[in-house]
Structures are given as C-alpha cells and as structure tokens.
Length: 222
Image 1: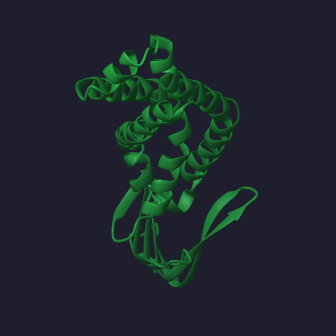
Image 2: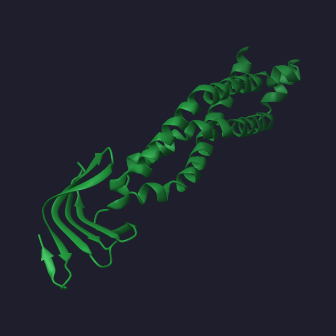
Image 3: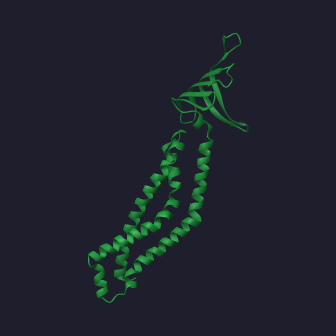
C-alpha cells in the first residue's frame, strides 16, 4: 500500500474496532440476560457471571464481525467521499480497485481472524462454558441453600441458612424434613458444611439438635 492507501486503512481500523466493541457488548448483554436466573438463583458471584459471559465472546465476535466490517467500510468511505479525499485519488488517476484496496485488505484480515476464532478459540470457549454451567447446575449448595432465605427446591424439604461464609460454611441452619407426613423432622444447627461423597452431596451439621414428632404427639429432642 502507498501512503494514501495506508491513510485510508488507518481511517478504517479504528472505526471497525469501535463498531465491533459496541456490537459485541450489546450481544453480550443479550446473551447474559438468559443466564441471570441460572446464576443468581443459584447464588453465584458476579465474577462467575462475568466469566460465563466472556466465554461467549468468541462466538459473538465471529457473528458480528461481517456486520461491523460492512458498517465500518460504509461509514468511512462515505465520510472520505464527503471530505473530497476520494475525489483527489480519482483525480490522480487511481482506479476503483486501488481506492477500495484498503477495505479488501481489512476484509481479508477479518476473514482470517474469524476463521481462527471459529476453528480454535470458539470450540475451547464453548467447552469451558458448558463445563462451568454444568458445575453450577450440579452445585448442591448453591441450589439448596441461599443466605437469609427459606428455600424448598425439593418437595418436603425446607432449608434456611442465616449466613454463608466465604469458605462455604453454613451458619444458623434450620432444615425441615416433611417428606414423611407422619414423622416430620426438624434439624437445627449452629453451623454446617457441604460434603460430596460418592453417593452424592450431604450436609454435615455441628452443634445442633434433631426435633422429631413421635407417635404420642410429643416432641423428641436429641
């Protein structure tokens, strides 16, 4: 490219990048809204939400890249035409191809980048996103327990935790098990932790009591 073509190319690139950033952010916002219930209802942090959203970025960029390229070329060449900067090139004997060459170069670079994203980056990002979403869906603690709320995600089982520490310790636990209507049980504990065994997750309670209704109607306290 000669000096004037490099000037055209230099005008195209910032506009293209700005449009790409704007379109990607809009698409990310739309994509993130579908994950709000999954993440916040299961007590996930903002960092987890942001990480899931960023993993969807390669796929979004590959989709919006052609749109961004078209918009950047249209806007930039339209502005150059209004400022008579393209007319000068025609007056110097340039052909249409020489004027459009910077746009074609940018399009070729965008095609290579989109190909690399689709072949390498996007599959890795999607695989990681699916694994994280699976972990969130399978996270017993985040689905069963939420700080300061009575939650009943399983019929006949109500769980309340007054506070959840950063290390996952559950404080002020109340668990009501009414799956057996004739023998309801209430567990009260100062604290508890989630343990994952081969048979599945369990809650280990410490410094608490078990209140069970016995046959004569009295409460058996252990």
